[in-house]
Length: 275
Picture 1 (cartoon, rainbow, N blue to C red):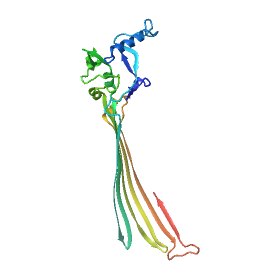
Picture 2: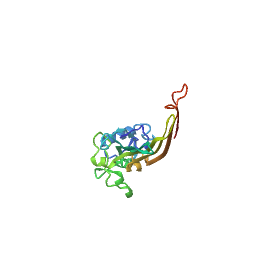
Picture 3: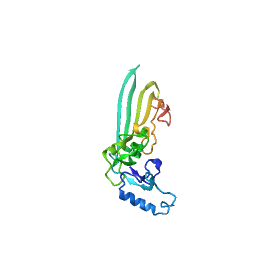
Picture 4: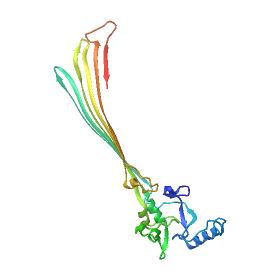
């Protein structure tokens, strides 16, 4: 996670506004900033901007956070599987042999991604720390509005590296992620053999039926669905699917061949197929 002056505030990762009464701003640093501002044409006396205790200073902090969330890595897990079953055989009717086959298979994949994100509203509350009784506290707990109090809010020190407390880390961290599932079901039946015999040979046929179903499901985690991360964009569940019924027929009619010969023609067959 990072905060940068290059990002807009709407993204939740814009630069951090530093107030004159920030609880973690040392007295010498605070006075140095104020002295500098008072000597500039814009912020000094008659400069037009001015500043007051408790108001944001025209000072912004960009920062890369190495310890704001428990883990900065994204975890991805993918599993795939396939189950297939097939039966086949043959039988005789009126001296003719027929073959059959039944098959069913299911294949699918499940993928999940997880990463720690920053709970935007809580970060904004924790980063706005003031002194109360000599101790840094979240301003929401000491401002005039009692309706926004949060006893779990732990103030964050934005200065230096490695000083985010465990309480603050727990307060602003939220696990984000998605789950993806794809499933394909396929069932098939075939029947083939010979219908009758012509002088050139047996008339053969093959029939087939296939049913195919595909479904896909995209499910974000509760936090991603609620849009409480920095971009504050809810991720919507998605689910869809379709199925098909397919039928096919093929036939083979021998016209010339076997015991039936024709001048200059050794073999001639009529082959047709429909799907």
